[in-house]
Image (cartoon, rainbow, N blue to C red; front, side, top):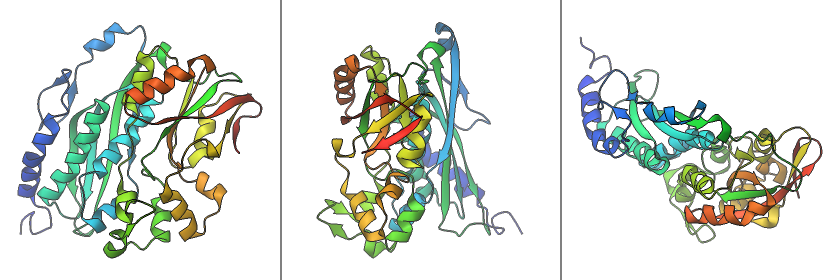
Length: 341
């Protein structure tokens, strides 16, 4: 008897590491010390000394049951982008710069080529957010997970000078709300998605004119990463007063998290285009509107508040970063919360 007969292939683990190295190397930053394969990832904090009062920010998350779609479609090269996005977007909306990322893959059986494809997506997410992929873990769980199943999660660390943190404390009535377009469902609400749509490969590979792609392509579209857009806004000299990453809980849970007491967000639902995947989801699942906005991003992956005088500059900076911005509402005086009208 040996470890391989027990279901864990050590040699496959070594091969996975070799296959993923080329992807990991692309994410390196000057601050990274050492190479892949050590017991820990090392990252120099020398540059942080230039800040007046540096604050470390962290985020950890996974892709939820969206991973199931990747399994059904046998497409694993983008799900890693989602894992990175869910972490670094949280750091960015607090005003931070993501520094590095670590991933954790749990699988029933280590298939090196598949693991390398997953890590390829993680590396792409790191490239999109200028974060270094400095470590990770691939764990085989025979008997706990089916051989063809896996789960993916990650952890990111970022930094921000305390004076640049986005806290919402300077919000005032009249501030403008700007939303940045999402790529679709992103990585939340997939347990409901999987109840609404048939998750067979045949169904997911069906093309729909109203989507302009197959159902699977629309649902598996990777989560947008907004790090560079927020950096572009900062470099334009604009102060973001408050920011919300629209994830699980949709508008009703996430928008109030960026507000201070005595302020209320008012968002116009017709101020931006809602991607057709959401209309299709609501129709096929007979999901009422409030529940849709309480579960999904409905086409806006991030909402931020700026002074009215800075609205045009903010829009220009977001476009310069390659994202699509919309003026979607305003801050008003009132009980802390959000109105969708």
